[in-house]
Image 1 (spheres, rainbow, N blue to C red):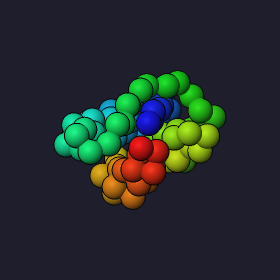
Image 2: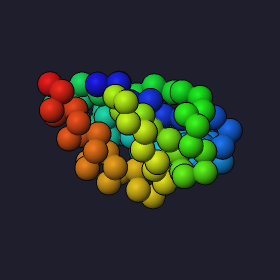
Image 3: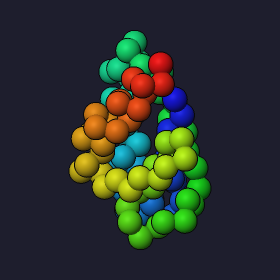
Image 4: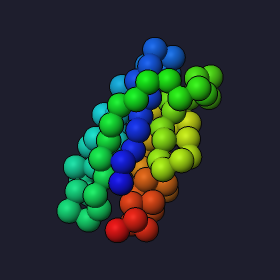
Length: 83
């Protein structure tokens, strides 16, 4: 499953680097259970709401402090239903 994370300037200011580091760590921890591919993307058009993350056709907005919960509650569940 592909997960796009905005690395545009607005999301960068809102902590995209920290979100990416957290998600990268978690993907490595779960790589034997689920297939998740993280990829960078530029602006998704919702800059004021937090770091934009696109999964399938849905865009989420994540704060760095919520990245781990987002992984478990959204990414991991989506990945488990895909495969």
